[in-house]
Image (cartoon, rainbow, N blue to C red; front, side, top):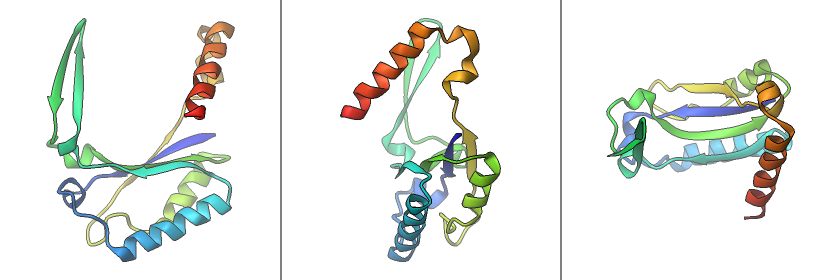
Length: 141
């Protein structure tokens, strides 16, 4: 089972305040533990929403909305992608994580990633083949 572990933004992360050396060291050590456990697939921090944009879809219309975005508690500051045996295992690992936003309350969200079998018969053999081909090409980059 794959899970996306989402670190919610804070006022500091949205203001572009960089993490301290102490937090970067703690997170680096934590990431090494994840690698040693064989569960880490990917991870990264995200720039503040002021450097981002949203594209709103309304029928055939596309509207671009430049950041920053108002609801800090709904924004993402970073993420991990993990391969674990269960949601409980993901929860257990998140509980071991250093507080990503020292000095304030922080929240990390855990969301399961869809697997091919989750889509049922609508995900035809042709679509599966296309998906595998796209993923293989993307990994080459």
